Image 1 (cartoon, rainbow, N blue to C red):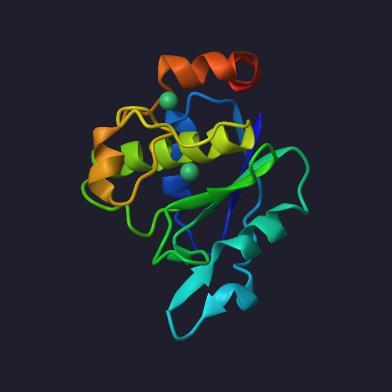
Image 2: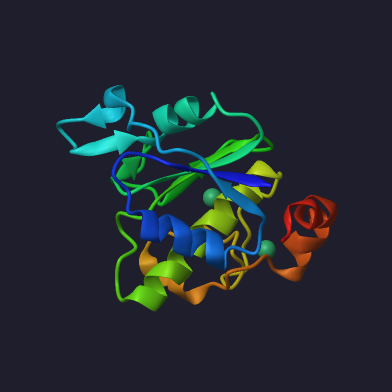
Length: 164
Ligand SMILES: [Zn+2]
Ligand SMILES: [Zn+2]
């Protein structure tokens, strides 16, 4: 079970579309405020680490979802971030918009990617694997919404435990 945690004013319809299209069992938690201290006024962006910290207040495996633009140290922006071999991941839908179908597909890919980190997967060299690092939306659009056979084998039992 993955707890989907909406941050701030994110659209309920987007959260629902994500849950409907994720192959994992999900439950939706009540929305919480965006952590104020995450905001960097010079960049007009939010530091992802604070979202991870906030989400730690909840038990189990948690996927935070936000519609604000996230960054982390050393990167101009990120689509998401996760604790490696941990419980918490966060994705941003800020940069994913482009037609409804593509948007939902991108959101699902970023979620499956970050959840992959929480179950111990690192980035994969295979450009079609969902664990391939996305530098830009082209990377996201090229890759599949699922783990390549090599990655899948590594975390088979963890994935099975999360499936619908
Ligand atoms: Zn990653
Ligand atoms: Zn892979």
